Structures are given as C-alpha cells and as structure tokens.
Length: 183
Image (tube, rainbow, N blue to C red; front, side):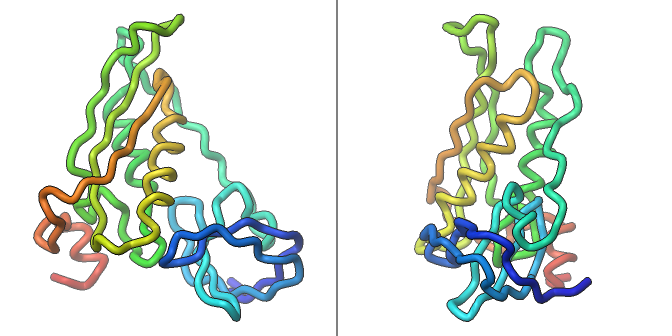
C-alpha cells in the first residue's frame, strides 16, 4: 500500500492530540499512519490529523460500508452485542487498540424512549480516556455515538466521559495487551 497520498479536495480533519478541527487543503501531501475503525490517521507537514471515514475518498480510498446488520431483539430493542461490536470499531487515533479492549468503556445500558413513535431506545455509555488532558476525548466520544446510532432500534445515544475511576493499564483486555506488546 502506498502510504503517501495527495488530497484530491479540501478535508476537515481533527488535529491530534488537541482535537481541534482544521481544513487540510486540496493538494496537501499526507502520509497514512494507521487505518482503524474506518478513520485514517495521517501526518502532514503540520502534524497528525484524523480523517473521518466519510472523507477517505479524498486520499483515494473507498468509503467503508457503515451499515449494521439488523440486530434487534424480539421486542425491537437493539441487540447489546451489536452495540458492543460498534464500540469495538472506535479507536483513539494514537493507539491501535479499540476503546473496549483498552478498557475505556465503563458501562453501556439501553433504555426505552417512551416519547417516540415508533418507540426507540437510548444507549447510555460511560467511558474515560487514557489521560485527562487528551484533546481527542470529544472526537472519540462523538465517533462512539455516531457508530452506536447505526444500530437498528437505537433512537438516541449519550456517550459521557468520566474520570472516576481513573483509567490504568490493568483495565486493558488480554487481546489489547497482546496488540500493544504488553504480554
């Protein structure tokens, strides 16, 4: 794979690690560092940026199919396993392990939305980050929310960042530790 590309059009990207949005102009040269969860982490002359999956055509890549197979329970509620699968597609752009295996997701629950017709469900997620100063937190939380909203039956999602309890490396799953070379 050719890791160096030239942007075919302007792209709004997220600067790493600040989380600030910035427009990368057409004809900018980028070097692809990683491709995880449909997003691309690229390096420019001005630092690292995350390009969302919906914009990867600008670097000559195919936009990924983000549809989720019908995954509802008999009562129409979203299948929790489908939600967890979506959360496993969310990555910190600096770490090649998803937020579930990193141990960043503390809880996920599904509640019926009574005021919607047809009735939908709200997914509430509590998560943390590896460091309190991480500017990418809002971008990671928004990525999680957008992926959860793709699950059939989900009408709303709230992804809340918390610092209690503080994250530590013991929270990383065995699979995550293997990917990071910690075991």
